[in-house]
Image (tube, rainbow, N blue to C red):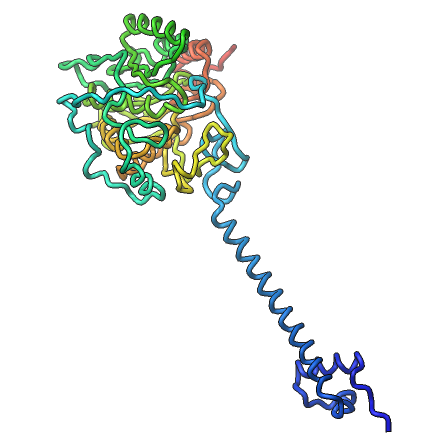
Length: 448
């Protein structure tokens, strides 16, 4: 009698199904006819089922692993737009934000190449400021990712050796100085203005002297322009003119570092050291730039309030919180992993204008002696504050400090402290209009 062919495709598939679901014992007629089939048929069906079962589970595992990898990448890529961190209005000089990478050109800082001029370290600091010669003893770093490794890297460095190096006490020598700007016996200044500028910006300095930097605007105001040097024949001509300007106005300090964008940190630290050395009793200090509009009167009225006791450990401005380093090598604000390995900067204030209590000038300078130098001056100052465990204070409202250009109206400008990117002629025009209308600024409208 002819035996049924159990090797048929139909029976093989059914055997595999039955084996997978109910084992070898089933009551289907096709399987029953196969009880006399050769054992290799059952073995083949079993192997087919096993392969199918294994492939299905492997595919599921791979899908799950792929999903986990994607989630991990999204979790750690802080630079991705919209993942984390605040969105910066009108552009951010150091970070990616929701609208992509924005930029703001500071008119008074043009060069992108680091150039340094080494000068011998003075044999000893001034007696009145001997405590500036070493980092503050109790200023151990707070837990800011990347700050500890930055400090550790500095252990073997000495002197100013470029980006990533350590500043020693006054590594550059003064070409122009005003050590008697705060004379002994005079009342302590209410506010020292440190204004970053370059030699060729003569019109900007003159406009500031006639407007918000005029020392008669508010009692107790001291104005200082901060400069480095330029090389070449043009630099020598500018230097001669600058020294004549200094003799007329007595408001310039200059050291012999190269005046470039990448040396802005050195320029700012020069100002910090000057305050600590020559004007330690000042109540407040403001660091700003030469293309800024500063409402000095409103700053004093709204923030400094001279009738009250001076604040201590106070630092405020336009707060930059939770921003990521810019890793784009073509950017003006590029920050390499080697210089700053962390994925986040500590909170800092925009370098276009920030205000701090006078006691912080020396503290920040001392803290800087233990931190590798970075070219982003406002970020670097924030790192020094983090080392000192001082958190910048938010201003009374977010519209006081603006690192972008605010459209002019006498009403708006009578209630802000800073606005950015002003030509000297515009500064003169708007300042004088505001002075004429400051008592009824929100009633009158400006007519061009």
